[in-house]
Amino acid sequence: MNDKLAIALTVAALALSSSFLAQAPVAAQGQAPSKKQIDQQYETAKKQCEALNDNARKICKAEADGQRSVAEAQARVTERNSPKNRLSLAEARAEAEFRIAKARCDDQVGEAKEVCKRSATAARDKAKEQAKRESQTQTQAPGSPGERGRSEGASGAGASPAMTPPATTEPATRPGQ
Image 1 (tube, helix red, strand yellow):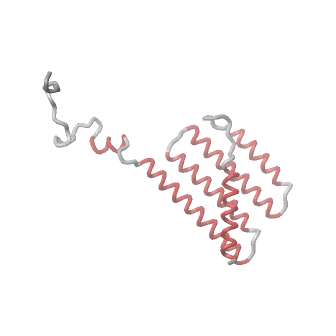
Image 2 (cartoon, rainbow, N blue to C red):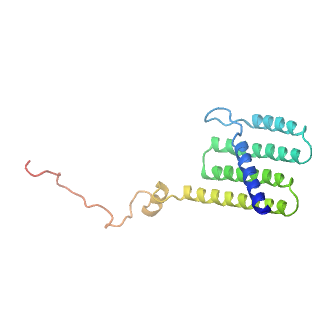
Image 3 (spheres, rainbow, N blue to C red):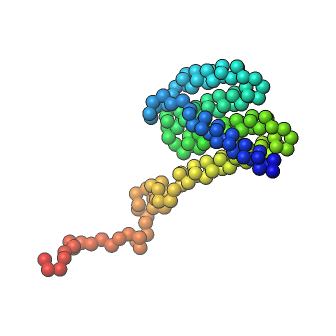
């Protein structure tokens, strides 16, 4: 029963940290926040953590670090939206959520703490694996221009005659004209 409770608490912690990380700094629509803005928000968040004690401070710092790394990755995606940068962003989110969840696990003791940490690790690994699969799907989509370009050659020359539609020299006419 304690394992189920620990897993439920971990899931709840991940959900809360996900909503926190979704609030990464954004300057304007379609515009990446500057490194300076990200650093300022990070410093502000860290200062707020100083008022906390013990594990609450550790959790707060994990949230601030996570928000910073996600914001930096988001800025790279905004600058250049590539599969590599999107993968980096998804991995940054997964790693940030893991660190926050792991810090929250320290509030527990004994077996519940160990179960919490294993659950956080499994959630991180699953999120990273899903991000990699999605990244590979986006870069190797069947029927994409790159995929057709490799099979048909750069200009389409080299396609087999069976695949080439027959050329017609007569104009198409309808009966009765």
